[in-house]
Length: 98
Image (tube, rainbow, N blue to C red):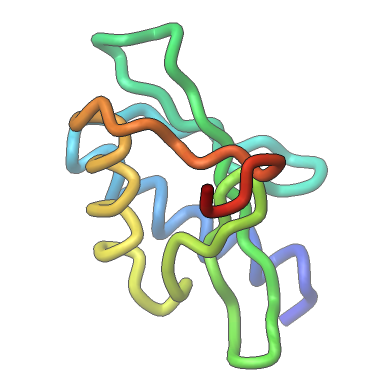
């Protein structure tokens, strides 16, 4: 399967899981990624993409951290929902782990 089709396939699986949990997920075509938002908090959006790494395909936050294996879209959706619902600050790539 060509690379972009694989990416779109995994993103589609994640979109379904997110929608089952009450979030909206729309596929952006180029490069394939998901724009995720909570319909109750429209100003808070996040982009999640899917990338091939040495150990397989992984969902990744917009700042580059891995969310979860693309083989586990339900676990990835649970982690994304947690960020949207707990109000926990999201890490910023420039700040590292500090």
